[in-house]
Length: 169
Image (cartoon, rainbow, N blue to C red; front, top):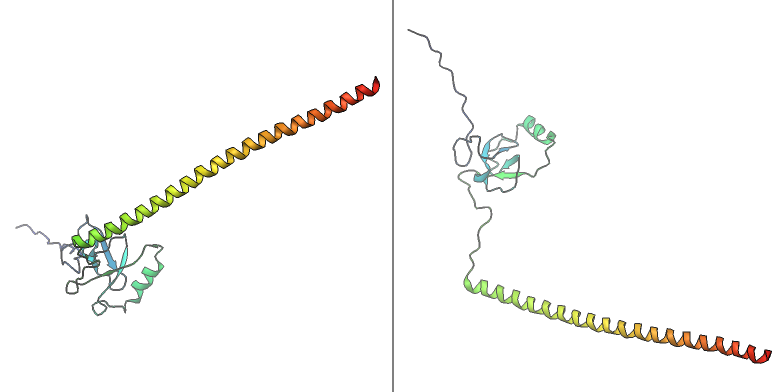
């Protein structure tokens, strides 16, 4: 007879909520206080937390100060989540039922707001066009005035030169 030693397999942790083995493929959360584990999917948490706190404080032993210190000393700054027990399972984000009437009202409001914004935009564009035309007119007047000023200066210079010529003669 051969002696085969039976080695005790290490029992993998189970999810507090669904009571299935955690495995390595799914993301898990661990309670800071009691060190219980739960699947991230089972908790309803959508962000990437590394630690969580049990929602049911009665099942969570907060007396474990060493584990709490370890969790507080962690340099991980990710947010915390709550682990819900199987009996205490809640839908974290209850879905609101929308009726077709609600959707149509909302769509109508959006359409009205859209039309108001389009009207404001058109007003601004019209004003912009008007201002551009005014700027063109002002620039044209400025050029005309510059020409007139240049002509008058030229005329005065020519008159002075003409007056000097007359005096010499």
